Image (cartoon, rainbow, N blue to C red; front, top):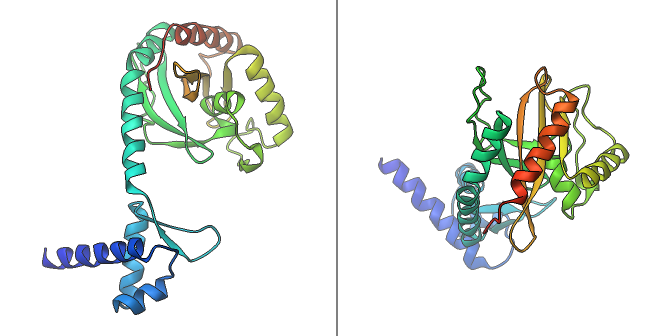
Length: 244
């Protein structure tokens, strides 16, 4: 216990020094200023980074302190979004008889922040809350790309299945189709045997705040079924005014 308290004290001391320094700082400078050996400093900095208290400037070893208040505000916003869309997800799950999801944009990935499964399917979908998925492989991600303002050049076109889109021009065509019909589809593009449908989610000021959709077994969700579900989800979402 004493050792843990001592490490915590050192970590807080390092964090305070980084804040007070007021500009990017190197680990070697921290070692010199605080008289902490390199191995101990390395462990302290790793913990601070893992807990999102600090970050490194892009392509450098320079350390900066993160704004913890912004992180707290973001957490509060996510909690509010989850609460304000709970009934919406419940209705989507009931009407489609599939598991419903809520996702948000997070550094060119989709973060699944909530899911509700009120279906009567014997095999339930695994818990995906907290999972991050590549934008181009996910129906949730495609809806955000189609109705948001994002740089497609920043997308890493990792391939997960034979159906995964791996070309930016093909993705652009797909995005135009999503814009035209109002919903997006993942046809076994992220996981073999699974299909998804999603629509964009806007707040009452018509600002894109994420996307909602469903996923299920591809043997059950044929092409014509996906279109039907896409229209169903669009109709459901159109009735809600999300306060966020």
